[in-house]
Length: 318
Image (cartoon, rainbow, N blue to C red; front, side):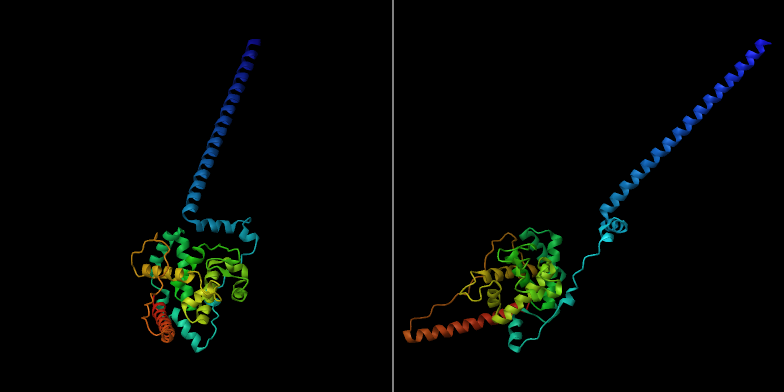
């Protein structure tokens, strides 16, 4: 009898041990499956993150959308900055007298040719980018702004680009010790009125605003001076001086190169910054002293008239 009881107890103990072992195995199996599932989930999340980053890298607009949806985005947390008004809305052309219009005609054109062709702009962009070592995308923006401004202000865009080249070498953040700023080295403190509709003088380093104000100033100075050379002399601040130290010749020399590039001619981007050659004056033959002065004055007047006629013919065509 005692042996039977012992045998039954032994069977119960063995059965309990087997059940415990089975339960342990089941728990381990379940834990193993959970761990494997977790690993697969982490792997899937990692692959998704990599794919998302790759997509954002090749399509930055997706990153902007994601950032805009984020509650921590600066765009949501702070108001959007005020955008510059379209250039067409910034126009404020003033009327002028007949003589002023005649002077402005030396650098203006009333037709759509002022905007140039896509091919011309592309040639100019590539040449400037190579010559002044400016990124192609940035150069494209500046050239496009110059052409658009030239059409709106009615002044040759290549002349605008030539002034930018000499003044700042296409550095939009250039500043001189005397306060000239930006691409066209505009004296913002002097021309506050022209920046008034563009947010004030702090817009002087805005490339589009700087180009437009500089073009308006140049157009005004050409009208006052009566010629491109006189306008450039005023622009550099040498109106009251005998000479502009070669500034006008440098600008017009660069203008000639830009015009040649736009027309498709091969001009080296590494050519020296040569100025336009001054007109050669023929010597006056030996005459009586009292007549020499009259001949000199008459010859000077004829040469000035010829130069102005040449300017009118040159700057009214691209």
